Length: 614
Image (cartoon, rainbow, N blue to C red; front, side):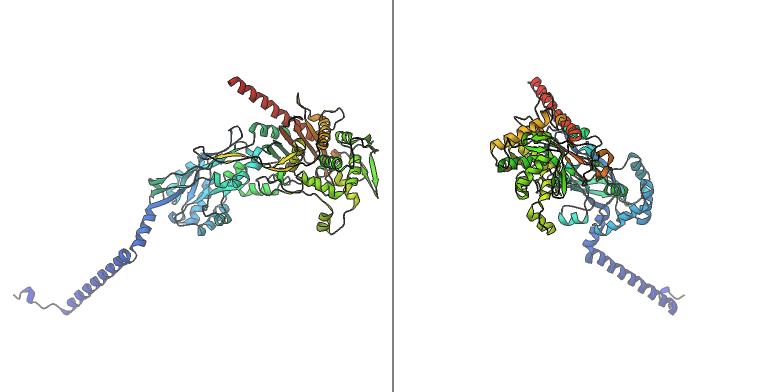
């Protein structure tokens, strides 16, 4: 028998063996090449991708700082909340995932698909918030179906809370998701961050936002968190104490009732805002949880404009409250003195127009004091004619009208103080003498905001004008004061003492004299001063029509400006009621009285409590 080693291997088999060996060598070579590519050439890149699939870096947005009232009571806080988050890289089928989420969370598919547009501008593996502040039922739904929703998880965050709801919205403002513009303006902002959008929340963003922290977490194949590997603690934002008195704010809100308009209360000696109410208003909690498209549309299309801060953006003819300025100018310029008398028959003819007094039968012969107390229009028509528009404008600007007050809130309006140069610039027309008469009673082209009129009555009260402000102090979490709100004197009323004395006596008797137009603002045991005003919305003819007979949008606005006590002013209040069914004395004065009386009642109670503790 021939040994096996000496047997001849058939050619076909030899060929097959060689092919097999060749294929094996080729496969092994390709495998080595692939391993070299992955391990050597792209090794670092593959290692990073592997880590990203298993380990994620989660940024933890810092808890925003708390906002307190002047007595340390909470006005804005943050509470724990759960958000639904989608990481697209972990989702197998994004459109299907979004459809399922819309069904589980009770949202429209169109709104949920809108999230897809955000994906192109986000870093890899950064989650997209699909819904904020989930309810218990929504959290259970997501947890129950989590295996069917790869890439979806729950994330605990802090949510802004506004206990006063709509009652202080126009100072506090609200937070909202950072827009593309916000991302460009501040590199700290990231997609999905909640930042201050309006009001104090925006103006003090750098103090309130804190310093973000982070977590290094291990996740499973569908993106669920398994454990935290490392954590950097976030630093909460600073605590802001503002000058608002929460109780007084509540009282002012209640006093306004269902009226549209504004109430401003401030300390005339410092410019501190004690209360600021706008009606109608909005609830900033809606923005904190994420406002829905329909809710936003309802707000912006509301004809009553609840988003407008009427105290600083509403520009209204000041009506007879403007007579404070005209009286000051008349005494200081010597066009009248305390003994000058003008006869009021109920109106005055000037050119082709008959200028009416609010009192049909007139006031008879009155001096400046009586004209202020009874708010005689004819007296101030005549005085305005003697002064001239440019002189009136000069004193109006001295009182702070025609320019923003400088309060640290956005979009403050300047109002309008007309003069000859203004009309030439605005309309390319000369100033007509008849227009001066209308300005003399706060009508015509002249407009002012409620906050500006708060400055006017404050200046009449103390002879000085301070910049209105609402920040008392700002402290870090360890209670280090980093900013203090200090009074800023803007202007001193440079007029004779006798001028101010006569104006103040007139304002005192507006409230306290039997025939004063503001007698419904009298306080219990405290002497107050003030001035009523009624400003026309549309021009009326010679026929007198009751306000209640006019369409709502054509009714007059009612004003009342006041301060107390007369001898040592502590508080100044301005009330504006839009389209009121009555004048300033009948509608606005009682509202101001409630606010003033509450202030002094609270002061007495607090002093009593403090005395009892001692």
